[in-house]
Length: 286
Ligand SMILES: [Zn+2]
Ligand SMILES: [Zn+2]
Image (tube, helix red, strand yellow):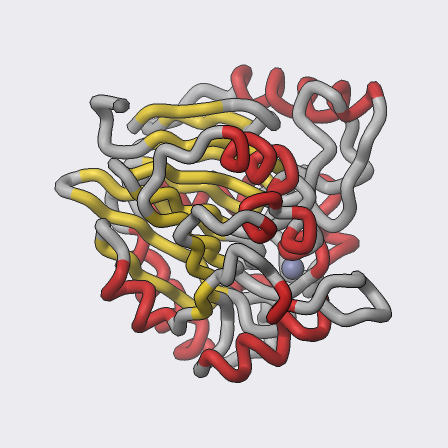
């Protein structure tokens, strides 16, 4: 078993829609899915198309007592992998799922839209693995680490997650846009949001952040609910995060485009923390 507190693995790093093909093979074409192992519990942040590969691996070998799937919100790029998660069709796994809903019945209503005969032939109730639905409060009690949730600025109800054990913490922050870009909002609302966000992120060991747009692409997409690389860097800097990982790459941005932006990043020094760009298959021990 691993000696570190967390093992983070990236199964899906793409935003909005999956991008197969050579031009996307380095940074990855599958949509949002990150697994965070903490001792014998596995936390899966989002269930985009990247969940398929993770599920196949778990179906072959599952060293975890509990598997927690934590859906940030129900946009397609964050749930499209759910029907194809192999452990759902096996009996010998302990699977729990939570999402942006105030009750289990509301969560069930959202899942029934995906597991509906018109979209997918298997009904949620027919899954052999019998995944159990939990509210945020229930999953916080069940988890072997401290979980905290925060509402993010994104169309529809969306939550960021912080997992803490001992002195280490990992934050998953997808999808979100900085509220200070919304100039028409009251200054006090923006200030409060900033204060709460910074408090939530304070000194996190690893911040996995929405960085959908390159800086020069953001302006035309203000209000879409996503951050630029610059926004994510500012967020990490203000919160004194120790490491920042940029993810949820826009589907238009090829490997070549991303590599070019990374080169520019390296040219500008002044970084008090490490920055990495998420690649499908990448893993980090914390
Ligand atoms: Zn998304
Ligand atoms: Zn979204």
